[in-house]
Length: 431
Ligand SMILES: *Cc1c(COP(=O)(O)O)cnc(C)c1O
Image 1 (tube, protein in one colour):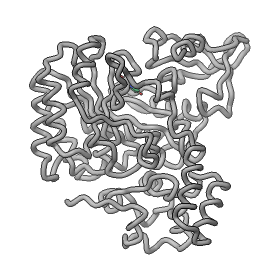
Image 2 (cartoon, protein in one colour; image 1 turned 90 degrees about the vertical axis):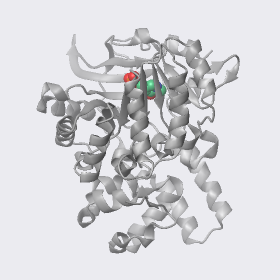
Image 3 (cartoon, helix red, strand yellow; image 1 turned 135 degrees about the vertical axis):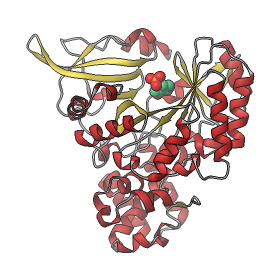
Image 4 (cartoon, protein in one colour; image 1 turned 60 degrees about the vertical axis):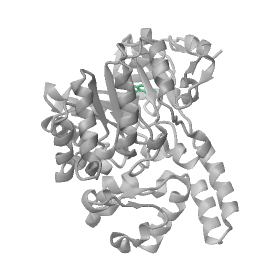
């Protein structure tokens, strides 16, 4: 099948859209001007159930929704569009609104590493073992998730993390023997032509780095464009390259991203999974928990079971990040924990490789382990799955119970403590 994308410029040509009222389309217009909007013909034709488009998880996953902007932001943009304001006035207001939506969460600017005094802008190194690499050809996606925390790099050009040269990465890996994993991310690196993958991966393999154990590829192509691994023109070469990685003794991990079991049901995705697994690659899957899309234990339990049936390893459940349309998607930490627990209880041990619910925040990945009463005080039990300091990992700590909390910044330490155990050290890291 041939890939086609739909954005604000051409989505109204879709026959399926003709059933939407003028008002519904105006909402797409307003919100789509502020938050990036792009979907693929696969999502439109094979995932979205247009009979029930208003409640369809894949429609809400890729099409702009009214609740994604505050009423004030929505009305500001709507009235400008209605009054036929000129492009530059509209642009100014839109940029203002974008900057109010916390475009760069979790202290990402602090993760950019240095080598010999030079900042390596296309890399991030936050957790000891794993380096992120942002190949410059992979900084967009086949479709955009409406909740994406990297949304700003599609909308705000200054926020791009990207790097052309792989040689600096190799130098950095040599200088940092503690790094065992390189994670290609973006955007979605699978948007790259295979020839770019070949350049990056062959350089890595040829460097013969004894510390390099795992190459991970973060991609949502299995949800948005599974044909990348089957019928795309350069798919066979990509599969060959993947096989070369695993043949060389390096673990190849496809970090997939499924938000709903519906994305595992098409023949196209199942063929792609089979093709990837035949190269010796492992596929892991992670997703945030989001209101309107998958805030239901049954959706998660069914999804994990289906993943395991197809040979995919359930990996993370995340909490919706503090950026973009967080208010639309946010689930309280208490609800997140309950959904996780109920889903986790419903599946067999082979599905319980999943960890969460986890907040990816400045200090690390913080898991909500549970809610309990300790010495008469109701508390959240938390624990780091990853930390800027690896010594923070795996030690339980406690926050006051708060039924409205949706993010780590809403939480206060329990038992009268002034701050969480890591806070002083975290502050010192930046000074
Ligand atoms: C999640 C994440 C990783 C990978 O962590 P794992 O737990 O090993 O999957 C690496 N770097 C950053 C910045 C991350 O957010």
